[in-house]
Image (cartoon, rainbow, N blue to C red; front, side, top):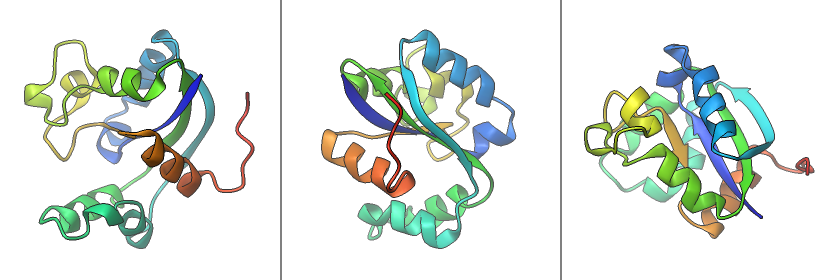
Length: 138
């Protein structure tokens, strides 16, 4: 089993897609090992996305991620990182495959409904960032 980190971003929460996204996660065979609704501060968003600090999109990304509540989750499944990234689809919803979460719920490359870890090291950092000191169920 592998664990990965997932976010239902503020755009999808505001559009009331949270329940449908969680349903799709469970139907895809993931176990949700931890879940919290969070309204990130700008500083928390900047810390989480620090790897992108020098990128031109960093200010708008962190402003967006702190614009409203999001849902953070620890997901578990065999090959969870790859499986979650496949379910999410391409970063740009216009380029995402039919049936993916971003194709269905995303509006733009930044307002793309979901986030997911891209590697085991990233998943470890992201899970620790949002679930510090928490013994994940399972």
